[in-house]
Length: 216
Image (cartoon, rainbow, N blue to C red; front, side):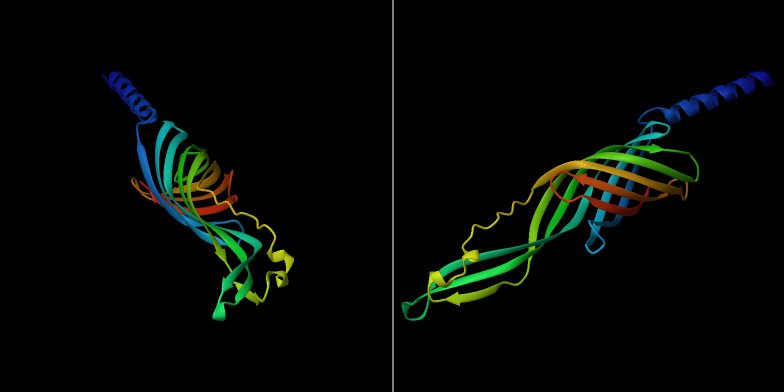
């Protein structure tokens, strides 16, 4: 009888283990915030919501979305000129210039990827890779303009009459995100997660990301 109970116990444990390792048998949801930067002089914020499910015991499928605010340092001088009629109907000509200081991106990413866990313990190191599609709201920050006035168009310096470079700002992009991190098992339902990500993009700058969050 004891042998039968022992065999039944082993079978039950094997069944439970198989159920735990069955694909899509459990789901986690996580909330993350942090920073991203192109260089350390231009730091902006991150926010992510992520859902994960198991494929095998050490491999997770994950999907996430959120918001990145990214700034790209930029240096370019724009020169323009115009004609205006002012007092006593005398024509006056104006030349002006201003500098483009930075390109600012509000990014709303959609990400799908996998996470590989190295060990199963209270500390869980892992690596990850995600495919990313971005919806982007772009803007350019400029310096205050400088303006000069002239009596005739011939007085305006020739550099103000040259064709200016047209700035094209993206509305979407795609890329990949490579990551490494470690999670800490706080309780049966709660985990602390810290990770580093490198985001490669096909249209805007590549950025480094450091984020921290919880998942349960």
